[in-house]
Image 1: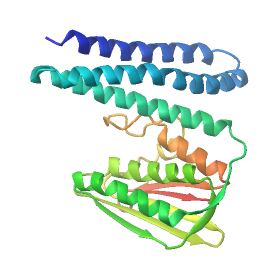
Image 2: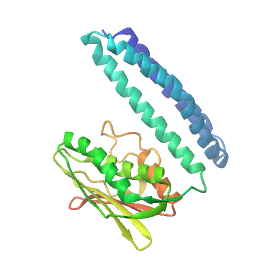
Image 3: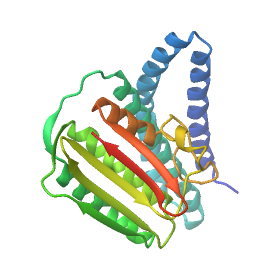
Image 4: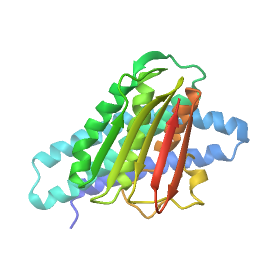
Amino acid sequence: MQPVFSASFDGALILVSFLVAAILSRIAVRPVAQSIEEQKRFIADASHELKTPLAVISANNQILLSGAAEAQKEWLNSTSVEIKIMNDVLRDMLTLAQGEALSVITKVNADVSNIADGICLQFDAVAFEKNITLESRIQENVFADCDEKMIRRLFTILIDNAVKYESEGGKVFVALQKNGNKTTFAVRNFGSTVKKEDLPHLFERFYRADKSRSGGGVGLGLAIAKNIADLHGGTIKAASSETTGTLFIAEF
């Protein structure tokens, strides 16, 4: 029998999801222009408001987990996974809402070579666990006028996406180089491809090319990446084929 406390946590998560869906659906029936602006404000406000109750649920779940019997830990661990997923979704919703609200960003002359090297290093352990070869070709001393935090997020999204969808034993290739006054960041994975009909929609919010995959997020990461590129006056493109794998190129 499923423990009562686990069921209560699952119920809380379902309730939160239902409330978010209900409010979004109510907003969606209003005039389009007004609805878009209100939806952005709602996403930002809801993300902030839901952080605290989720933090409480997470803390209580950890307390229960520390004293739970082995038979109960499976359910509590499952709840922890769902809490993390919801936290990630809220983070992405807030990031996207904040990015879309910006018209001007604060730029500094940042060492993007150092940023790229650091993120590749962070993903070494993840790649190792999946027996994936993470190969990088990062040009040294590449500096760019950018919002350093945003560019770090952009690089992270693209590498995370490639590692996540690469097959076990496969390969992910990361490259950074300066082309004139533009900086180009490219990530390629070889184990999975994107269907031709899905390519034009990859950067749309909540779009998932492979809906059958579990643990693939809710389709906000690439939308955030495009928003960051747009804010820097840059571009982001995707290409995919059976022979060359899937390639994402961001230029800013």
